[in-house]
Image: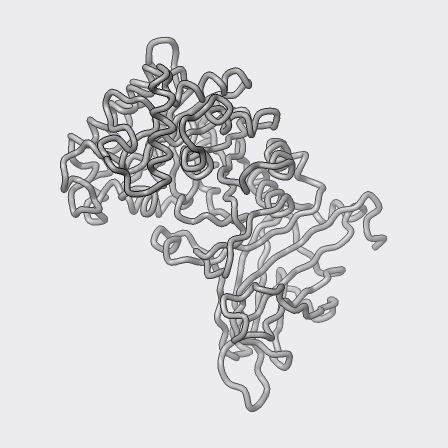
Length: 490
């Protein structure tokens, strides 16, 4: 049955066990729950594993950090000793969190990265050239881990993380084994679903983190349509772990339609950065409330049943707690300022058919129009009395003021809209001394504005000054929609 949820994820490491000095007291141990308590988060997701162990007192897997003496890295030593300081008191590190979550009115789900299996024989892993999840020993091991979680812990469900590869874990299958692995994985999931749905004490939920595109899942041996139609999963989360930038145009529409026909929930995943080194930026930039609001509004508009996020700027302050509250309700993000930042391409995303249009290199050619589709949740025409401004921003690299462009929005030219050039923020470029004249081109839109839903930006690079050759590169594309109780008076 579909259910609305607001989910916050903690990976047990970066904003938890890496940070505290042992021995761990209860205030430290409760921190992942307490920092989000009182917001609209009603479900806590906890990553229970890494490639070298799990973060709870297991009897079927390997405790993270065990068997390492001495530890070679201080943060791994911290994590192990913090957990052991609780275990020596007769406490299970994860049960401490589960009990605290329930005290604060939150459901608790465990997230398992399926490509992690420290107890399995060497050579089985896909990263070692092995057959990965085709190996019955590996499938049996992960089934037993999930059974331990579902049977021994008072959790509301398990989340199977199929999206962690390539950087959170190895792939489940070698690329050449995906077709053979697909039915084996689905049959394994049938066993998992039957076990979790019929566990003692009442049924649990089975969720799946999947890749954003249907092709990307199929390419890696994930038969998501069958999982949904057979009711093997109760919810899905389209996400790509290795792409950590917020994408308001995440292409998950296909799974919303499919899931809702089978009464399966879809939770939209909001990443925590708008820029990072992953996409060629010089520094990381956390999403602010206006960025978050834009992506959340788009996801709600596309039919998600709830929103899911993680790794916000830590320690969480009032800004982050406010974002966690606002994202839970589509009405709270509707008529407020939004800043849509169109995501940039990386080599990682292209490996799984996750299409980004930026950066976009252009050679002068007036006959060629470069197209960038994008989605806007705002009904600008219907909210005319409350709109104070709409700004379309383009950030150019290797361009000069004498370059000539034609810019169209949904087939209409922006030549009569007000356009100003704005210098880039200090420190924006990776090599600021080499391109000191890069700029934003800002269109303040009055007559030609985005529509609710799908939009299309088209740009033609008409030409350059006579003695200048070479290309211009569109690095960034953004849309800002601002609201006011008094509107713009237009």
